[in-house]
Image 1: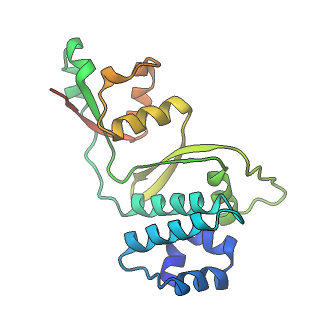
Image 2 (image 1 turned 30 degrees about the horizontal axis):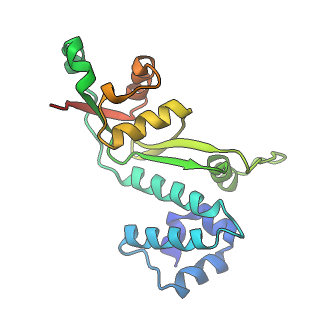
Length: 193
């Protein structure tokens, strides 16, 4: 079960190596195919929610990191093509999230927990009961972990579902879009017509 342990190092550390390996072995989880094993492991951890309700969310974060690391690099965003659009086309814009990007939302501070487990900071206090929203995005063969505010999270989720810019009602996304593009969270666009 070492293979799954390399994909989920923080979960393995928190559960304990023998317990993690026993859980995987008891449910015949192997690393091949990785996506199937990861989904099964996350489902198993969700069932154990009473003891560690944050553990399944942590596993989802670790799997998102693995997916980002394995993602094929996407081409750079074509800003010139975006700037060439007429203003009446803006409402029909459908932005394309970067391949390998995952959105993580948890009622727990899973990003801080992940960072604390893998790189402990002596004397630091972790408040686990803090909600967390982030994007995990591929960057130069690594995974960038980017905390998101509510609007950025909702907007990216909207684009993941194929929603248009014109369907965004609550806030003006024009201030946020340049940052999302610059951070590599969006890699392109199409027009919905």
